[in-house]
Image (spheres, rainbow, N blue to C red):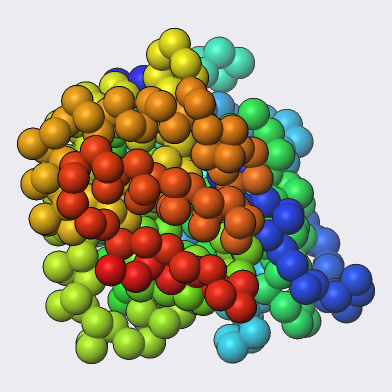
Amino acid sequence: MADIITPPDDQQEDLDDVVGAPRNYQAVVNTADWTVETILQQITKGNIELNPGFQRREAWRLPRKSKYIESLVMGIPVPQIVLAERRDKKGAFVVIDGKQRLLSLRQFAAREDDKLYDSFKLEGLTERGDLNGRGYNDFEQDLILADDRDALDNATIRTAVIRNWKDENFLYTVFLRLNTGSVPLSPQELRQALHPGPFVEFVDKYSGDCKKLHDVMGISGADGRMRDAELVIRYIAFRNLLREYAGSMKDILDLASKKYNDEWNAEKANVDIQVREFESAIDTVVDIFGMRCAFRKWNGERYEAALNRAVFDVMILFFVDANIAAAARQRKQAVEAAFRDLCANSDEFRASVEGTTKSLQSIYGRLLLWSNALEVAIERPVPKPTLQNNRIALVA
């Protein structure tokens, strides 16, 4: 399958979500040149938090990892890494920028019997083709490579360390400003580092294994940018905490992560039920629209290629209800026609799924318009959203 087509910027967390932040963050940023040997020691000790489970989401393929190692051996400058010292543990660091590079280092240094990280041998090198097929063990055991091993261990990587930060918004601001490339990272990666816990771990594993979700996203496995995990947390947040939404996607996803981490023992059974209903809702949407068109916006002539998160929200929230889903499956043509009509003929609905999709008014508007259209299409009552005191609720 092709890689997921990135949704419109407004459907993702961005700097607009970092609200209420002070103008002066008063953080202290120090830079230093850390050797590769020092960095590996810090990872091994757990001081640099590099979750081994992240390997199944790694975005770098072997040739790119190999070229990174080659650059270090040859003394070619490499990009800096950015760390933030945890407020609750002095000397422990969250990775803000550079996780793929750190993961490549740790994997290359892994022994063949390493139980946490997958080792690899270099390949695809051009400048140092003599190193192709070599691993870190070879660097240690082959006297001919002794100089190369010393060069790697002593290679320096500029490291910026953020300390004394008072507000997570500062770290999100740094993260989002650093990640403005053609393939932007998802803030879910930072959220997982800042709010570790049983719920976040559950979402990471569940979303990484959820083939039905991957199929509609157009990917073949766990997403390296963690957008599959973000969609699951977004679903849990909107289904259970919609009344708490105040216009910031970041805040509602952070709230859900904290709440369900803290209350996991009490909430686990309910979340297990809700993710099963989540998959059933995906099945319903695929049955009605087809795999290639599920959760896509109709542009008047065809369904767009990119998964639309705003459309995803409204479809999932209604079709997790088994009775509504069953009625919709019986009237598939009417349901699809109703959705196409909204996309083609309702300026308000179109604006709510392609413009400012994260505002309270946009979320309320698309929920209301779709609930009305769906109710007519399936000829049975569906829950309706209310908007009171700048809070949304779905009322049966």
